[in-house]
Length: 442
Image 1 (tube, rainbow, N blue to C red):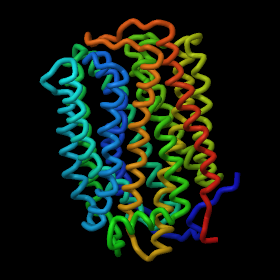
Image 2 (image 1 turned 135 degrees about the horizontal axis):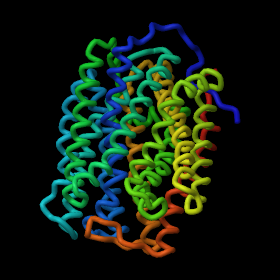
Image 3 (image 1 turned 180 degrees about the horizontal axis):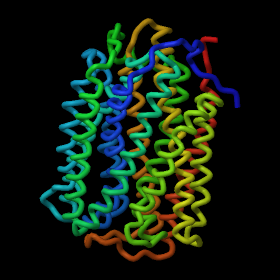
Image 4 (image 1 turned 90 degrees about the horizontal axis):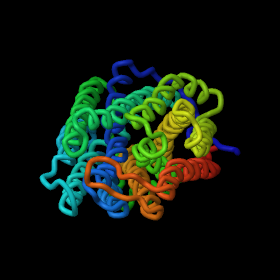
Protein backbone atom coordinates (compact mmCIF):
# COMPACT_ATOMS: atom_id res chain seq x y z
CA UNK A 1 0.00 0.00 0.00
CA UNK A 2 1.47 3.34 -1.06
CA UNK A 3 0.50 6.26 1.11
CA UNK A 4 1.76 9.76 1.66
CA UNK A 5 1.06 12.63 3.96
CA UNK A 6 -0.51 15.87 2.74
CA UNK A 7 2.32 17.95 4.22
CA UNK A 8 5.31 17.70 1.89
CA UNK A 9 7.70 19.97 3.75
CA UNK A 10 8.83 19.35 7.33
CA UNK A 11 9.98 22.65 8.85
CA UNK A 12 11.79 23.31 12.08
CA UNK A 13 9.49 25.02 14.57
CA UNK A 14 9.71 25.81 18.25
CA UNK A 15 8.81 22.93 20.54
CA UNK A 16 5.57 23.29 22.45
CA UNK A 17 6.13 23.87 26.18
CA UNK A 18 5.17 21.07 28.51
CA UNK A 19 2.54 23.29 30.15
CA UNK A 20 0.74 23.58 26.81
CA UNK A 21 1.10 19.87 26.06
CA UNK A 22 -0.25 18.89 29.48
CA UNK A 23 -2.95 21.58 29.52
CA UNK A 24 -4.30 20.73 26.10
CA UNK A 25 -4.22 17.00 26.79
CA UNK A 26 -6.39 17.43 29.92
CA UNK A 27 -9.32 18.20 27.63
CA UNK A 28 -9.28 14.49 26.80
CA UNK A 29 -10.75 13.88 30.25
CA UNK A 30 -13.90 15.47 28.82
CA UNK A 31 -13.87 13.82 25.40
CA UNK A 32 -12.79 10.46 26.82
CA UNK A 33 -15.48 10.41 29.49
CA UNK A 34 -18.33 11.50 27.24
CA UNK A 35 -17.11 9.36 24.35
CA UNK A 36 -16.90 6.26 26.56
CA UNK A 37 -19.48 6.19 29.33
CA UNK A 38 -22.73 6.79 27.37
CA UNK A 39 -21.79 4.04 24.93
CA UNK A 40 -20.87 1.79 27.84
CA UNK A 41 -23.72 2.43 30.30
CA UNK A 42 -26.72 3.80 28.44
CA UNK A 43 -27.75 0.78 26.40
CA UNK A 44 -27.59 -1.71 29.33
CA UNK A 45 -29.16 0.95 31.61
CA UNK A 46 -32.13 1.15 29.26
CA UNK A 47 -32.48 -2.61 28.67
CA UNK A 48 -31.55 -4.03 32.08
CA UNK A 49 -32.70 -1.28 34.48
CA UNK A 50 -35.52 0.64 32.78
CA UNK A 51 -36.92 -2.39 30.93
CA UNK A 52 -36.79 -0.83 27.44
CA UNK A 53 -36.70 -3.30 24.53
CA UNK A 54 -33.26 -3.63 22.90
CA UNK A 55 -34.35 -2.26 19.52
CA UNK A 56 -36.06 0.79 21.04
CA UNK A 57 -33.12 1.37 23.39
CA UNK A 58 -30.80 1.40 20.40
CA UNK A 59 -32.85 4.17 18.78
CA UNK A 60 -32.91 6.19 22.00
CA UNK A 61 -29.10 6.08 22.13
CA UNK A 62 -28.68 6.70 18.39
CA UNK A 63 -30.94 9.71 17.79
CA UNK A 64 -29.37 12.21 20.23
CA UNK A 65 -25.91 11.37 18.91
CA UNK A 66 -27.11 11.65 15.32
CA UNK A 67 -28.33 15.15 16.18
CA UNK A 68 -24.70 16.13 16.72
CA UNK A 69 -24.01 15.40 13.06
CA UNK A 70 -26.04 18.53 12.33
CA UNK A 71 -24.80 20.56 15.29
CA UNK A 72 -21.04 19.94 14.97
CA UNK A 73 -20.48 21.80 11.67
CA UNK A 74 -22.48 24.73 13.05
CA UNK A 75 -20.32 24.71 16.19
CA UNK A 76 -17.23 24.76 13.98
CA UNK A 77 -18.51 27.73 12.01
CA UNK A 78 -19.37 29.67 15.17
CA UNK A 79 -16.01 28.95 16.83
CA UNK A 80 -14.19 29.99 13.63
CA UNK A 81 -15.97 33.34 13.69
CA UNK A 82 -15.16 33.87 17.36
CA UNK A 83 -11.46 33.15 16.87
CA UNK A 84 -10.59 32.40 20.52
CA UNK A 85 -11.81 28.87 21.19
CA UNK A 86 -11.03 28.67 24.91
CA UNK A 87 -14.27 30.33 26.15
CA UNK A 88 -16.24 27.64 24.30
CA UNK A 89 -14.32 24.98 26.22
CA UNK A 90 -15.12 26.53 29.59
CA UNK A 91 -18.84 27.22 29.12
CA UNK A 92 -19.71 24.08 27.15
CA UNK A 93 -17.60 21.83 29.39
CA UNK A 94 -19.19 22.98 32.65
CA UNK A 95 -22.69 22.78 31.14
CA UNK A 96 -21.93 19.28 29.87
CA UNK A 97 -20.96 18.15 33.38
CA UNK A 98 -24.36 19.16 34.76
CA UNK A 99 -26.30 17.69 31.86
CA UNK A 100 -24.42 14.39 32.01
CA UNK A 101 -25.39 13.87 35.65
CA UNK A 102 -28.96 14.77 34.68
CA UNK A 103 -29.16 11.86 32.20
CA UNK A 104 -29.49 9.39 35.09
CA UNK A 105 -31.58 11.65 37.35
CA UNK A 106 -34.98 11.21 35.74
CA UNK A 107 -38.18 11.07 37.81
CA UNK A 108 -39.63 8.00 36.05
CA UNK A 109 -38.18 4.63 37.07
CA UNK A 110 -39.19 2.44 34.13
CA UNK A 111 -41.07 2.26 30.86
CA UNK A 112 -41.62 4.71 28.01
CA UNK A 113 -41.52 7.87 30.15
CA UNK A 114 -38.15 6.93 31.63
CA UNK A 115 -36.73 6.15 28.19
CA UNK A 116 -38.02 9.44 26.75
CA UNK A 117 -36.43 11.41 29.60
CA UNK A 118 -33.05 9.71 29.02
CA UNK A 119 -33.23 10.51 25.30
CA UNK A 120 -34.07 14.19 25.94
CA UNK A 121 -31.33 14.65 28.57
CA UNK A 122 -28.82 12.85 26.36
CA UNK A 123 -29.77 15.15 23.46
CA UNK A 124 -29.10 18.24 25.59
CA UNK A 125 -25.77 16.84 26.79
CA UNK A 126 -24.73 15.93 23.24
CA UNK A 127 -25.43 19.50 22.10
CA UNK A 128 -23.23 20.94 24.87
CA UNK A 129 -20.55 18.40 24.00
CA UNK A 130 -20.50 19.56 20.37
CA UNK A 131 -19.56 23.08 21.45
CA UNK A 132 -16.71 21.67 23.55
CA UNK A 133 -15.40 19.00 21.21
CA UNK A 134 -15.28 20.95 17.96
CA UNK A 135 -13.18 23.89 19.25
CA UNK A 136 -11.02 21.45 21.21
CA UNK A 137 -10.17 19.31 18.19
CA UNK A 138 -9.53 22.46 16.11
CA UNK A 139 -6.84 23.79 18.46
CA UNK A 140 -3.79 21.64 17.45
CA UNK A 141 -3.65 23.17 13.97
CA UNK A 142 -3.53 26.60 15.63
CA UNK A 143 -1.13 25.77 18.48
CA UNK A 144 1.76 24.75 16.19
CA UNK A 145 2.77 24.65 12.52
CA UNK A 146 5.18 21.78 13.16
CA UNK A 147 4.44 18.46 11.47
CA UNK A 148 6.33 16.46 14.13
CA UNK A 149 5.05 18.70 16.94
CA UNK A 150 1.47 17.75 16.06
CA UNK A 151 2.35 14.09 16.51
CA UNK A 152 3.95 14.97 19.86
CA UNK A 153 0.87 16.91 20.92
CA UNK A 154 -1.43 14.07 19.84
CA UNK A 155 0.71 11.53 21.70
CA UNK A 156 0.16 13.49 24.92
CA UNK A 157 -3.51 13.89 24.15
CA UNK A 158 -4.12 10.22 23.38
CA UNK A 159 -2.18 9.18 26.50
CA UNK A 160 -4.57 11.26 28.61
CA UNK A 161 -7.48 10.02 26.48
CA UNK A 162 -6.47 6.45 27.31
CA UNK A 163 -6.27 7.38 30.98
CA UNK A 164 -9.71 9.03 30.78
CA UNK A 165 -11.16 5.91 29.17
CA UNK A 166 -9.57 3.79 31.90
CA UNK A 167 -10.83 5.99 34.75
CA UNK A 168 -14.31 6.65 33.38
CA UNK A 169 -14.90 3.36 31.60
CA UNK A 170 -13.49 1.10 34.30
CA UNK A 171 -14.74 2.99 37.35
CA UNK A 172 -18.22 4.05 36.17
CA UNK A 173 -19.55 0.45 36.16
CA UNK A 174 -17.79 -0.10 39.49
CA UNK A 175 -19.49 2.99 40.95
CA UNK A 176 -22.84 1.63 39.77
CA UNK A 177 -22.14 -1.71 41.42
CA UNK A 178 -20.73 -0.34 44.68
CA UNK A 179 -23.53 2.20 45.24
CA UNK A 180 -26.40 -0.25 45.02
CA UNK A 181 -26.82 -0.82 41.30
CA UNK A 182 -30.01 -0.03 39.40
CA UNK A 183 -31.22 3.56 39.24
CA UNK A 184 -29.40 4.70 42.39
CA UNK A 185 -26.07 3.30 41.26
CA UNK A 186 -26.37 4.93 37.84
CA UNK A 187 -27.14 8.30 39.43
CA UNK A 188 -23.92 8.12 41.45
CA UNK A 189 -22.04 7.16 38.29
CA UNK A 190 -23.49 10.22 36.54
CA UNK A 191 -22.22 12.46 39.34
CA UNK A 192 -18.79 10.80 39.22
CA UNK A 193 -18.39 11.32 35.48
CA UNK A 194 -19.73 14.88 35.72
CA UNK A 195 -16.99 15.67 38.25
CA UNK A 196 -14.38 14.19 35.92
CA UNK A 197 -15.65 16.43 33.12
CA UNK A 198 -15.31 19.50 35.37
CA UNK A 199 -11.66 18.61 36.10
CA UNK A 200 -10.88 18.23 32.39
CA UNK A 201 -12.67 21.46 31.47
CA UNK A 202 -10.81 23.58 34.03
CA UNK A 203 -7.52 21.85 33.18
CA UNK A 204 -7.63 22.59 29.45
CA UNK A 205 -8.96 26.13 29.93
CA UNK A 206 -6.28 27.25 32.37
CA UNK A 207 -3.55 24.99 30.98
CA UNK A 208 -3.66 26.60 27.52
CA UNK A 209 -4.05 30.14 28.84
CA UNK A 210 -0.51 31.16 27.86
CA UNK A 211 -0.38 29.16 24.61
CA UNK A 212 0.65 31.00 21.45
CA UNK A 213 -2.46 30.19 19.42
CA UNK A 214 -2.63 31.33 15.82
CA UNK A 215 -5.82 33.26 15.24
CA UNK A 216 -8.25 32.61 12.43
CA UNK A 217 -7.01 34.53 9.40
CA UNK A 218 -10.07 34.37 7.20
CA UNK A 219 -13.07 32.17 6.59
CA UNK A 220 -15.28 31.42 3.65
CA UNK A 221 -18.39 33.63 3.48
CA UNK A 222 -20.91 30.94 4.37
CA UNK A 223 -21.13 27.41 5.71
CA UNK A 224 -22.07 25.86 2.38
CA UNK A 225 -18.97 27.32 0.74
CA UNK A 226 -16.82 26.11 3.60
CA UNK A 227 -18.21 22.59 3.25
CA UNK A 228 -17.34 22.65 -0.46
CA UNK A 229 -13.78 23.65 0.43
CA UNK A 230 -13.55 20.75 2.89
CA UNK A 231 -14.91 18.37 0.25
CA UNK A 232 -12.16 19.54 -2.13
CA UNK A 233 -9.48 18.41 0.33
CA UNK A 234 -8.73 14.90 -0.92
CA UNK A 235 -6.60 13.68 2.01
CA UNK A 236 -9.22 14.93 4.46
CA UNK A 237 -12.04 13.14 2.63
CA UNK A 238 -10.20 9.82 2.76
CA UNK A 239 -9.24 10.19 6.40
CA UNK A 240 -12.74 11.27 7.45
CA UNK A 241 -14.40 8.28 5.78
CA UNK A 242 -11.97 5.90 7.48
CA UNK A 243 -12.58 7.63 10.84
CA UNK A 244 -16.37 7.26 10.52
CA UNK A 245 -16.29 3.57 9.60
CA UNK A 246 -13.85 2.77 12.39
CA UNK A 247 -15.92 4.79 14.88
CA UNK A 248 -18.88 2.52 14.09
CA UNK A 249 -16.75 -0.50 14.93
CA UNK A 250 -15.43 1.01 18.16
CA UNK A 251 -18.93 2.13 19.16
CA UNK A 252 -20.23 -1.39 18.58
CA UNK A 253 -17.56 -2.92 20.81
CA UNK A 254 -18.03 -0.25 23.46
CA UNK A 255 -21.77 -0.87 23.61
CA UNK A 256 -21.16 -4.58 24.12
CA UNK A 257 -18.71 -4.41 27.04
CA UNK A 258 -21.27 -4.85 29.83
CA UNK A 259 -23.18 -7.54 27.90
CA UNK A 260 -19.93 -9.38 27.11
CA UNK A 261 -18.90 -9.20 30.77
CA UNK A 262 -22.31 -10.44 31.99
CA UNK A 263 -22.96 -13.24 29.50
CA UNK A 264 -19.54 -14.40 28.21
CA UNK A 265 -16.89 -13.65 30.86
CA UNK A 266 -19.43 -14.02 33.68
CA UNK A 267 -17.29 -12.54 36.43
CA UNK A 268 -18.14 -9.94 39.05
CA UNK A 269 -16.90 -6.47 38.01
CA UNK A 270 -16.11 -7.99 34.60
CA UNK A 271 -16.62 -4.69 32.75
CA UNK A 272 -14.09 -2.96 35.01
CA UNK A 273 -11.46 -5.65 34.36
CA UNK A 274 -12.12 -5.52 30.61
CA UNK A 275 -11.51 -1.78 30.56
CA UNK A 276 -8.37 -2.10 32.65
CA UNK A 277 -7.07 -4.74 30.24
CA UNK A 278 -8.00 -2.56 27.27
CA UNK A 279 -6.44 0.72 28.41
CA UNK A 280 -3.59 -0.22 30.76
CA UNK A 281 -1.25 -1.71 28.12
CA UNK A 282 -2.20 1.06 25.69
CA UNK A 283 -0.75 3.63 28.08
CA UNK A 284 2.54 1.72 28.22
CA UNK A 285 3.03 1.45 24.46
CA UNK A 286 2.55 5.14 23.61
CA UNK A 287 6.32 5.75 23.28
CA UNK A 288 6.54 2.75 20.94
CA UNK A 289 3.78 4.11 18.73
CA UNK A 290 5.53 7.48 18.60
CA UNK A 291 8.71 5.70 17.47
CA UNK A 292 6.74 3.72 14.89
CA UNK A 293 5.33 6.96 13.49
CA UNK A 294 8.84 8.32 12.90
CA UNK A 295 9.95 5.08 11.25
CA UNK A 296 6.90 4.11 9.19
CA UNK A 297 5.04 7.39 8.78
CA UNK A 298 1.60 8.20 10.09
CA UNK A 299 -0.60 6.45 7.48
CA UNK A 300 1.25 3.13 7.66
CA UNK A 301 1.30 3.28 11.45
CA UNK A 302 -2.45 3.91 11.42
CA UNK A 303 -2.91 0.84 9.24
CA UNK A 304 -0.82 -1.31 11.58
CA UNK A 305 -2.79 -0.18 14.64
CA UNK A 306 -6.12 -0.80 12.91
CA UNK A 307 -5.19 -4.31 11.76
CA UNK A 308 -3.90 -5.18 15.23
CA UNK A 309 -7.25 -4.09 16.69
CA UNK A 310 -9.15 -6.20 14.14
CA UNK A 311 -6.98 -9.29 14.71
CA UNK A 312 -7.49 -9.09 18.47
CA UNK A 313 -11.23 -8.68 18.10
CA UNK A 314 -11.50 -11.74 15.83
CA UNK A 315 -9.41 -13.79 18.25
CA UNK A 316 -11.97 -12.97 20.97
CA UNK A 317 -14.39 -15.33 19.23
CA UNK A 318 -12.65 -18.01 21.28
CA UNK A 319 -13.58 -16.24 24.54
CA UNK A 320 -16.22 -18.78 25.68
CA UNK A 321 -13.51 -21.46 25.75
CA UNK A 322 -10.82 -19.30 27.37
CA UNK A 323 -10.11 -18.60 31.03
CA UNK A 324 -10.67 -14.95 32.05
CA UNK A 325 -6.93 -14.24 31.94
CA UNK A 326 -6.82 -15.30 28.28
CA UNK A 327 -9.74 -13.02 27.48
CA UNK A 328 -8.07 -10.06 29.19
CA UNK A 329 -4.82 -10.66 27.29
CA UNK A 330 -6.65 -10.55 23.97
CA UNK A 331 -8.43 -7.37 25.04
CA UNK A 332 -4.99 -5.91 25.82
CA UNK A 333 -3.92 -6.60 22.22
CA UNK A 334 -7.01 -4.74 21.01
CA UNK A 335 -6.14 -1.83 23.29
CA UNK A 336 -2.62 -1.56 21.87
CA UNK A 337 -4.07 -1.40 18.36
CA UNK A 338 -6.66 1.16 19.44
CA UNK A 339 -3.94 3.42 20.89
CA UNK A 340 -2.04 3.50 17.58
CA UNK A 341 -5.21 4.00 15.60
CA UNK A 342 -6.22 7.02 17.70
CA UNK A 343 -2.76 8.65 17.81
CA UNK A 344 -2.15 8.62 14.08
CA UNK A 345 -5.64 9.43 12.85
CA UNK A 346 -5.79 12.49 15.10
CA UNK A 347 -2.22 13.49 14.18
CA UNK A 348 -3.10 13.33 10.47
CA UNK A 349 -6.15 15.59 10.87
CA UNK A 350 -4.17 18.79 11.62
CA UNK A 351 -1.87 17.92 8.70
CA UNK A 352 -4.94 17.96 6.44
CA UNK A 353 -6.01 21.30 7.93
CA UNK A 354 -2.54 22.78 7.41
CA UNK A 355 -2.58 21.56 3.80
CA UNK A 356 -5.88 23.35 3.27
CA UNK A 357 -4.50 26.55 4.81
CA UNK A 358 -1.54 26.44 2.43
CA UNK A 359 -3.86 25.74 -0.49
CA UNK A 360 -6.51 28.40 0.19
CA UNK A 361 -4.71 30.98 2.36
CA UNK A 362 -7.44 30.66 5.00
CA UNK A 363 -7.17 29.15 8.47
CA UNK A 364 -10.56 27.53 9.08
CA UNK A 365 -9.84 24.59 11.34
CA UNK A 366 -13.31 24.71 12.89
CA UNK A 367 -14.97 23.64 9.65
CA UNK A 368 -12.79 20.55 9.27
CA UNK A 369 -13.00 19.58 12.92
CA UNK A 370 -16.76 20.19 12.87
CA UNK A 371 -17.09 17.64 10.08
CA UNK A 372 -14.57 15.35 11.77
CA UNK A 373 -16.36 15.31 15.10
CA UNK A 374 -19.73 15.03 13.38
CA UNK A 375 -18.46 11.94 11.58
CA UNK A 376 -17.02 10.49 14.78
CA UNK A 377 -20.26 11.20 16.64
CA UNK A 378 -22.30 9.55 13.90
CA UNK A 379 -20.07 6.47 13.98
CA UNK A 380 -20.13 6.17 17.75
CA UNK A 381 -23.93 6.58 17.64
CA UNK A 382 -24.42 3.97 14.93
CA UNK A 383 -22.28 1.47 16.86
CA UNK A 384 -24.65 1.04 19.86
CA UNK A 385 -27.63 1.11 17.50
CA UNK A 386 -26.07 -1.67 15.43
CA UNK A 387 -25.25 -3.69 18.55
CA UNK A 388 -28.81 -3.23 19.86
CA UNK A 389 -30.13 -4.46 16.51
CA UNK A 390 -27.99 -7.60 16.82
CA UNK A 391 -29.35 -8.18 20.33
CA UNK A 392 -32.92 -7.75 19.07
CA UNK A 393 -32.37 -10.17 16.18
CA UNK A 394 -30.85 -12.80 18.46
CA UNK A 395 -33.70 -12.50 20.97
CA UNK A 396 -32.12 -10.65 23.90
CA UNK A 397 -34.55 -10.36 26.86
CA UNK A 398 -34.77 -6.98 28.65
CA UNK A 399 -35.23 -6.48 32.41
CA UNK A 400 -36.46 -3.72 34.74
CA UNK A 401 -34.83 -5.15 37.90
CA UNK A 402 -31.38 -3.61 37.54
CA UNK A 403 -29.92 -7.07 36.86
CA UNK A 404 -29.46 -8.64 33.43
CA UNK A 405 -32.03 -11.34 32.66
CA UNK A 406 -30.87 -14.91 31.99
CA UNK A 407 -30.35 -15.36 28.24
CA UNK A 408 -30.53 -18.45 26.04
CA UNK A 409 -27.70 -19.72 23.82
CA UNK A 410 -28.92 -17.76 20.79
CA UNK A 411 -28.94 -14.45 22.66
CA UNK A 412 -25.47 -15.14 24.07
CA UNK A 413 -24.22 -15.84 20.54
CA UNK A 414 -25.54 -12.42 19.49
CA UNK A 415 -23.70 -10.81 22.41
CA UNK A 416 -20.46 -12.50 21.30
CA UNK A 417 -20.72 -11.78 17.55
CA UNK A 418 -21.65 -8.15 18.09
CA UNK A 419 -18.63 -7.67 20.34
CA UNK A 420 -16.07 -9.44 18.13
CA UNK A 421 -16.83 -9.97 14.44
CA UNK A 422 -18.62 -6.68 13.75
CA UNK A 423 -15.90 -4.41 15.22
CA UNK A 424 -13.15 -6.47 13.57
CA UNK A 425 -14.70 -6.21 10.12
CA UNK A 426 -15.45 -2.49 10.38
CA UNK A 427 -12.09 -1.41 11.79
CA UNK A 428 -10.00 -3.74 9.64
CA UNK A 429 -11.80 -3.19 6.33
CA UNK A 430 -11.60 0.59 6.69
CA UNK A 431 -7.81 0.41 6.21
CA UNK A 432 -8.45 0.05 2.47
CA UNK A 433 -9.63 3.67 2.47
CA UNK A 434 -6.07 4.80 3.22
CA UNK A 435 -5.20 4.08 -0.41
CA UNK A 436 -6.90 7.37 -1.26
CA UNK A 437 -4.80 9.30 1.26
CA UNK A 438 -2.37 10.97 -1.15
CA UNK A 439 -0.03 13.93 -1.05
CA UNK A 440 -1.58 16.09 -3.76
CA UNK A 441 1.09 18.79 -3.50
CA UNK A 442 3.99 16.69 -4.69
